Length: 264
Image (tube, rainbow, N blue to C red):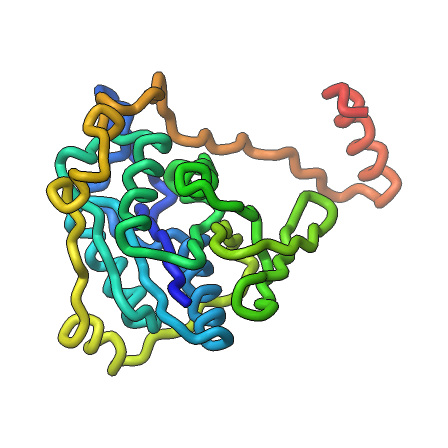
């Protein structure tokens, strides 16, 4: 069983700064982490390996510094890691990114592909499903629980607004995992050291994937969408504090405020 997990290194900050000329995130000087949903995806893969056997491979597309995120995944217990990186891939939107990653996953080989639901820096939730479409395999999103049924079937619990879906899916397939799947396991010192001294992060650059890629479908020039405008989330204004009033007066004040705003 070959389980491939796609992860992304994202800025670890709520104070997002944007380049006013390019409308892209300014990452210099900002610490980075593995995207939260993706880390839950690693945990899901490791649990599946414990039940089914096989290997867990982590893949990340990004600049050279994404090596740190891949080493962390190796320290958590992943068997191998690939960094998809090259200047030719720079500026890719979700469509081009999913195309490049799908080709990398095809080259590596897979039975199950796991991604996080969405990344905290882009919040699109598009890349995982688009990878599945480009691989031509079934997908289940918002996965909270996975139960293997034999070697070729999974029973998946999918969170959906006010209910759950219980879905049977055949392999190969792609699952997008939510953070509520479970708490990712801690790394120990020996595994952290081993991730840097005993394991290798293999590079898949443009030359390695060139025979599988259409150059006009990658990078900024191959991206059918672009960011027209970006801006930080605005802080909410200070609320009204009501003091020294009774419970009945508080209820009346709240009802009046909701009516004023045409909520009720």
